[in-house]
Length: 582
Image 1 (spheres, rainbow, N blue to C red):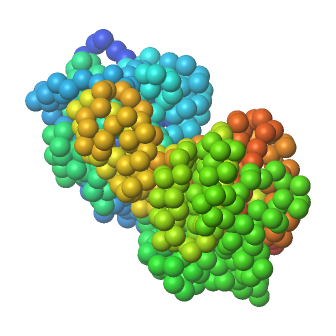
Image 2: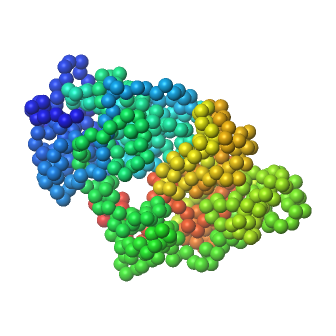
Image 3: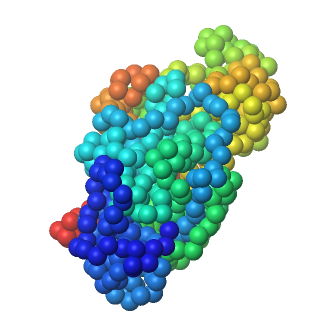
């Protein structure tokens, strides 16, 4: 992609829109910049003067992410503004589109098409937010829809029409007259809750084919140097690494790339989200046990020890109430919260009577977390007793509970106010007609692990095998294509469940009930689990309360911000600091 200064036409810096194109021979524009909505691409090979390129980077807008790409002499550029710019730790890979061979494997589970509707833009931004990426102004998508310079593709579920992935491409020839037929791929993002295999690969392939049809000869992409999973995919598709550099301006969005982990190595996402928010506010952080998620926060003479979202503000009494599910149920029931019926395992006659009364039950250890030992939807005495034995591996006391129908709703209550609500759905796979159920579970488990920083995976155990058998298959069967198979009954994130934000539509009755639970336990931070018919309806049944809910699961809701507000009410919120009001 390198071009010499002689190949670059002299002139003022030009900001190139995403939908302009010319049928005449391309004229290379000097100081070329392409607006991508989330920020701008500054094509370094078109800048003859590094001072002009540095100045352009310094003009980055608020909440934007500008990138100077194809910088051949990064040391010279960095010297122009050493306190403001940094070298991006990414590699650039290139695909030869003239030698590229499309895949012969078809699939019917999802379709790839151009972004065309306002709702598409909303869904793309939802996926960007879930992946901690900078969102795009909706009007940008509207202005550039159908353009050939900046191309937006989306993957859409063939059955539900839900948007499950997106990718952006830039045609360099149509953007600024690149004579070498270059193009580039940006913002490849797959919904972390998607169950379809191959979404990312298919989006890359479709974009490559689209750009090749427009006459592009190569397609480049930038990927973090340590993203081994993505690099493996790109190399499989035929990408080869090229030697070029990218430079960015230091800002709060990319802070991690130029300041490092600052002693937070080993922290899981649930601890890291809180530590990052604390540091943004100037609160002192001392990681005391990274593996266990322990850290101490200090600010203005106040010091609080935390383990993820559990802090010294939560009393031992509140913890003990949450720790025993039978005790929790009694406490919240007295507060007027609707609870399902339950018995303690151990009496076969009582168990038989309970099954006759309710038809379907849940078995779970009286004490435990992260979905361990829980079995859902048991209908016979034999399978219930087998589930009880599995649960006893986690706790001697086992509870058998009436199965409440509906969806699993998690509500995060901080300082007795609702901060976030999300529907949690059990792990499932979508078949492709080629792979075994076991292999699809393993692949989905790898995707869930990658999307959650290693916190979510699908165990292949007796419960998974039972769920697959209930769907009519064995683990080593190859099921017909495009079938959704539930492989777990519980919706816990740690066993591969997915989480879907519903904060904006949750019914006031459910909010009121969740706050009642928090007050009944007298706990300042709690995750309340209900089974609901729908999040916008008032019907519910209480399941359990978690004294250490995972705040990172609910982004982009401000869970970490509200947690720090609780601990240090006089600290300045991040949003206020960004606006310059604090």
